Image 1 (tube, one colour):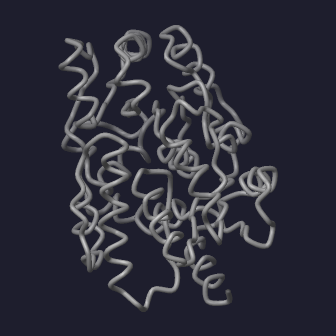
Image 2 (cartoon, helix red, strand yellow; image 1 turned 180 degrees about the horizontal axis):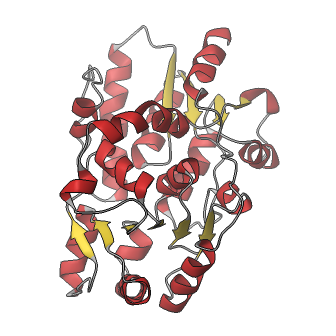
Length: 316
């Protein structure tokens, strides 16, 4: 799924492609560690390895570099859901604690790192690069894509949903409840509910024999088309951390289909609320988020995070 980003955003092709693919957490992490270590051993000109986020490849990249004595910088450091059942939470914690430079998106994430005993001279508040990406690409998403027209949608007249996390789609009861919640929203508001379905969720939907009634499931979208749908939605329902941030940045109200979030800043500014998976709660929290409220301020920076990180790296 990553090829579309390189093509659509005109990114240079990578010098190395590890070709890990999907597999179990241990296998994916192990394969990445083995193959990346080989690359790092071959290259003698690498000063710093930057890893961003909380995926298995992030943890593997940090471990491979740290064990070879190469400086590690973690972009998006200090995020915590405090839910150890989430594989991403384990990746975040371990990556932060083996990194040399920690680029925290907000003062709250910096404080989290300080509370865990990480030295303050290794932590830098930079904002989050997701703001950079949204600012750089929002105009293109309006001019170079056609998701709204192709789906016959109008600005502010549909809900956008994404559900893909392991704890939701691998659990039949929780997945069923979420789909029921989305169905209730359609009955209540009589608006289209667009669900670009992740391959993992699509597989589980079939395995459980579930149907998404009155929910329009579509194939995964490329970045710019999805950004256009986010920007024009009446409200977004999601279990994705990144989508919570993007909704906040774009000024679109968000209902998170989880019981915790590693983006508490979105809750604090009023851009987001936690609904979990109970259908009644999903409905009530949606009503709450659609009530008129003052415009919130984006807490994740001004779109200059990447520049700040580069400046810090060149000074270290």
